[in-house]
Length: 495
Image 1 (cartoon, helix red, strand yellow):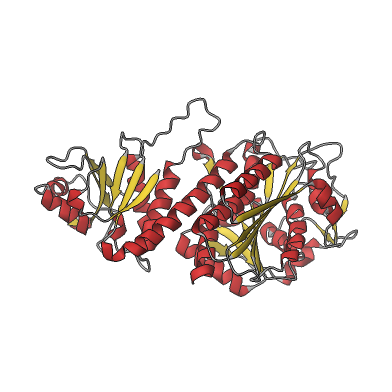
Image 2 (image 1 turned 90 degrees about the vertical axis):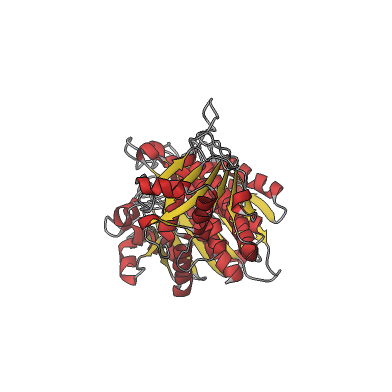
C-alpha cells in the first residue's frame, strides 16, 4: 500500500472511504462532526438509530454518502471521550482496517490521527496507523498459485493540519520504514525451510545491500568460521546438508569512530531437534526458529530507510539442526570460539550454540551494546504466554531502555532475573559448562549460558519464542520485535 499525508479540507477530499471516530454517548470526533455537518446530519442519524454505540473497536460502514466525493464512511468506536491508551488506539485502528480489507475499496482517507492518545503526538499516531494497517493487510501468497490478496486498498492518506505537518511527515517516514521491516521479517519467517535455507537468508541480506548503499554485507562461510574456532556454531550444522552461514550487516549512519549497536538474531532455518528429535506434532512450525535472524534483517532495513544517525551491526548465525550420522550427540563436548568447552546434554538446545560463538565474534566490533534475539526456549512461552517477549541482561540501563521502547512501540517485554544462583544449574562434570540446566527456569538458564559469553560488554537477550509467530488457524509470523528494536534505535538516535 502507498501512504501519504493529506492536509486538504476534509469536505473537499475524494476517496472510496473516509475513516472517522465516534465516542460513546453519540459524541463525534472533529472530523466526524465536520462531515456530519456537510452531509445533512448523516452520521447523527446512524448514531441515533443505534447502529453503533461508540464502544472501542466497533465499526459501521456507511455505504452511500449522498452528494459527496466521499463514497463511503467508516465509523470507528473509540470508547469514552477521553485520551485513549496506546493499546486502545491500536485496537481501534485494527478494527478499522479489518472492516475494510475485504471490501472493493482502493483509496482510504484516515482521520484517526486527530484522536487524543496519552503521551503520544501526531508523529506516533501517524506511525501507528501505518504499522497497524500494513500488518493487517499482509498476506503470504509467495507459495500459492493464486497471488490475489483480500485487501484491494492501494492508497491510504492520513489527515493532518498544516500546523502539525512536520510531525506527521516524521510519522510517515518512520511508519513506512518499520512496516517494511515487519513485512520483510514476516515474509522470510513464513517461507518454508526448503526455500528459506541459510544460503537463501544470506542472499536476501546481499539483496538488501544492493538496495541500500548505507548497508555493507559480508558472509562468513564454514571455512571462515572454522579458522575462527567457532566449534559451537559449526557443531549445529554438522547434521545438515545445508552449509551454515554467519551473515554480517554493517550500517554506518553515525560518526566514524562511534561505537556500534550490535544486533544478533538466531537464524535457524529449520529445527528438527537433531539427535534429541522433536515430537512430530507442530514440528512444521520449526521453520520459525529463524525469526530472530529475520527480525535483524527487518530492523536493519528500517534503520537504512529512516537513515538513522547511528552505527549498527547485524549478525545472523544461520544453520539447520537435523539428525544425521555426523550430528551432535548428547554427551559430546565442543570448544567454543571463546575457548570455553561445552557439554551437549540436549542437541535441541542448539540456538545457544549458534549465539555463543556469535557473541564472542561481536567483541571485534568494540560494541556500545549487544542485543540478541532468539526463539530460544519453549519455557518462555510457558512462563509469559504470547503477549510479552522475555528480557534478560547484564546491564540495567540497557534493559531499562529496552523496556521504555517496548511501551512506546506497544511491543511488550517482561524482564526476568539473571541471578548467580541459576548459573549453578549449568555445571558439568566434564566441560566448563553444560548447554542445558534441567527442567527448572529454562528461559533463565538459557540466558545464563549466553551471559558467560557476554562478559566483556553491555548485553541484553530477548527470548521471542512466544511472540515471533502465531499458531492455530491464524498461523503466521508477527514480525516482532522489529517495532521494539526500531523504537530503541529511534530513541538512541533522537532521544
